[in-house]
Length: 216
Image (cartoon, rainbow, N blue to C red; front, side, top):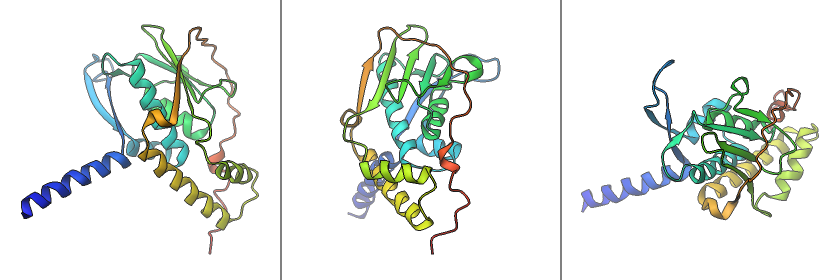
């Protein structure tokens, strides 16, 4: 009886961890001049360390890219040496883009644009097949959008910022519990246009309020 209980408990714990920490299996080269044989798993927790924190934008970007990459690589494991991506200029979305796909501006496999109609436009280089992915209408909470804009303008005090964080955390948990097909729209882009923009003055919105006093 105890053994069965422990086994069931472990299964539920593993399922809970999968909900909180979604992962993606990818293929990379095995050293600086190596072959494409390094199979590894990357997850949301790894991305949090790269980005600096978990937030709704990071969760949303990770889930969106994991879902769209599965469409691009429906026939095989994800080859991170064979992708290029355009991202909206959000600090969260851009960090997800470079970390998950391996895209880099200096190698002509990543850039940001405020003008694309999607969160991301991602292309499989060998087949030239490209996809756009965006959040479905009415998924993103309007109150987070309103307060987020006020926070960017520096108009929220520390306690209001704390409340905004709670709202974003709740939305992150909501996203992690949903099926990706219920959250995102994926569309194949027939005439994909890769025209890198040399722009480096986008506003980094996640550091605007870093010197605010704590909420007491």
